[in-house]
Amino acid sequence: MSYARMKFYCDDRRCIDCDGCSVACAEAHELPVGISRRKVVTLNEGVEGKEFSTSMACMHCTDAPCEQVCPVDCFYIREDGIVLHDKNICIGCGYCLYACPFGAPQFPEDNAFGTRGVMDKCTMCAGGPEPTNSAAERKLYGQNRIAEGKVPVCAAMCSTKALLVGDGEDVSNIYRQRVASRGHGVQSRPYGWSTAYGR
Amino acid sequence: MKKTVLFILMTLGAYARVISGQVPLVQTDLSASKGGDLLVSSQMIQNILHYQTWGELFVYLQVHWFRLLFAVILIGVIVVFAIHYLIIGAKVFNENCPCVLVYPLFQRVVHWIAALSFVLIIPTGLIMEFGKYLGGGEFVRISRHIHAIGTVIFIIVFIPLFYIWVRAMLLSFRDDTRWIYMLGGYLNKKHVKVPAGKFTFGQKMWFWMAILGGFVMIVTGAAMYFQNFDIALLSKLHLDQVDLLRISAITHNFVGMAILALFITHLYMSLFAIKGSLQSMITGFKSVHELKYLHHSYYRKLLTKGFISEDYEEDK
Ligand code: SF4
Ligand code: SF4
Image (cartoon, rainbow over all chains, first blue to last red; front, side):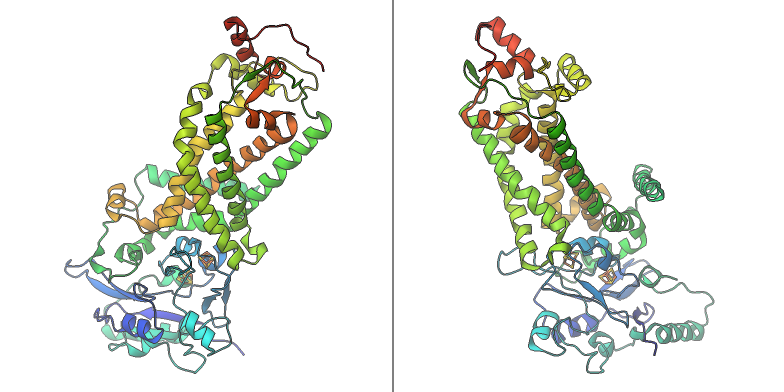
């Protein structure tokens, strides 16, 4: 059986900068204040015809650079392509952030020293290495919606369906259909797509 | 071989892009950041487009080179000195007086505080570098904190360290070129008169590495430690914050290698190669016999000033 390869896609033609995804994420996973695994950003603000908004989080890259640089090897990549890490092994060194093209890794303060703690990032709602849906998993990584057969909460909440998540093939097809129905010839891939997933 | 060439090309390429001004000029616009961690702001998003400049270089170096080079230096330098010890052996001088007070109390205190900081910083740095073989987790995390504590101690002692020795550590063309030519006399089993003032060129290299290299390590280390710092400064430098972090990590690793190599050298010289060297940093005194050979210019100077005389027993 071949597994799906999960990918994120945010259609910047549809995103209306409502922040629904990032609020849904923060609430669903009970994130500490100041940590947003997903953020909506607006680029070229005020420049007519060029302004657009898009929603960014960990893209769960192909050959994830974060996984490659981690000095303690705490990442693991699921067969469906979701990039996860083990917070009990992570030392909070920050290298994954330097390696990441999307600025996804974040570092909530750790209580013991009041300094930068271990890394936190989007899990595509797939939890972590602890037993699925255990209290420990929930505390460290938030909900494991994938295990329950649910769509990640950000995409589920997106009111304009700008933010999609799912098997890369399906996401690409939806994207192609949308471009075709808009009827303007060539359009570049969505922001960051080729950096995350290659061609 | 292919790897080496690729590595050199990539490094040169990245620097060339910086020098030629092709490094992306990013207007940092924080209006788009919705609070929280400043790194994921529109500048971070814009950095996606120039990830190739520093991001890919950092990944390449960290994946293929840093750990390897640290291992080569760690093992290589130790092996070279082990061979030196077996073939040439230690230098033994008559440690009986007459002796000269070379390191007054304040200098010794400063030296040992600096020594403490290095002993905290260097092993913990290596623990992080090789963290995956230690399983990561609490042990390596605590090492990260000790690395920072050691740095605070080094920062405190940095200016006194510079101040007490900077004059004696200034390079002297006459002595230092001859010292390099004869490699400090360390390849000679017999005692030879080595041209050197109060400090040999070897000691000077270590001092300047500790001061200049140490300064670079403090700055790059602080950048990585604080991670979120004043963005205004960066936009003046036309750098994305995350690129500065990447450059800091790259620099920290390379300078760290140089410091590691000289630190091991210093340990070998003081603990093994020159008998009585450790003692002199505890008591402050060096015997005239040792000065005559290892610091011959200094010895001559003391003679002309009449602080010491030539009649003493060379052998016990
Ligand atoms: S977006 Fe960043 S954190 Fe996520 S998989 Fe890619 S490199 Fe890793
Ligand atoms: S912060 Fe944690 S996950 Fe990121 S590279 Fe360092 S140890 Fe690995």
